[in-house]
Length: 396
Image 1: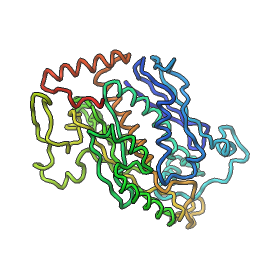
Image 2 (image 1 turned 60 degrees about the vertical axis):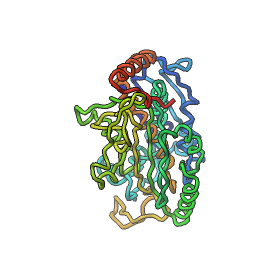
Image 3 (image 1 turned 120 degrees about the vertical axis):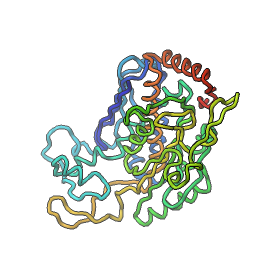
Image 4 (image 1 turned 90 degrees about the vertical axis):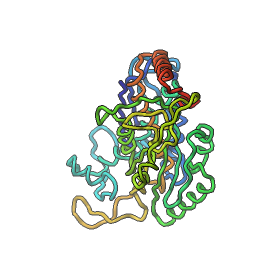
């Protein structure tokens, strides 16, 4: 029911997202989207590109007087840096296209993409493979976040590691209160002391011409039981979330709940025993499953952790090979971040919002927001009859 398509290049005129399937009547403003576009640009260790771009969205279709219409929504984020790249990025034939990039960067799509598409200039690959293109997804995810908020689902993210420095995990039940302080942290960390050490680690990597990766968690609070399905591989909620998270540039690992540590524990310590009382109804002793069992949400917070590799564009350039002459060279260097883990956590929030919006529309349907809310409320009432009180089904 929900379809999202994005387009645009890193140094092209703009990035665009088209969203189809959002119910009519959802409250949307440019300011509500711009908040998350600004968060995506923040974070200690970002490069000079963030000083050039000041992302803001233009809503070109699908919204009237602050409410969604029945048709597709079109969102555009302009690239301010395009004014410096028009000659190299014009859509028209050019007699002066600029020197081609011939030295691929290890860890990027450069060489694989050049070989796949029979290209002679790596720029034809790197412009679309760039993480700059995620601005369109963050804009689309902000619309999906508003939809989830209509039925009390909140999505929150924070950094748990940068390089060798780790931080405590946040309490899902307190995330709505802690999120403003997390967003104010230069590294989006819930632990100020660990955050200071992360900043120092980024400084050290910068001085060495190196980059740092890390890990972050994204938590959805207020998810009802029944999102996703066990019936097909591509309908399982955990599979859909893992796919979305792995689509983020530089993310190389995804865990749901206990993840890899759970693989080293006996079953008696991993599985979340079922309990029941009159106030809570069905509930669990813990949440090692990360809110998903058998591909279906179980009413507990949905917890996803992602591991992000260090960015592969380094000032101390890595060894490479010229794709034309096959000579040994140093890899191409273009502006790059030292660390983008905080920004990736914002992108991951957007991706979780998109997947959960798909899953809630699958579950509740509704051509209008009123119908969507009404169907969700009816499901809540039915679940209560069956012993699930819904106490945990609300982030409000």
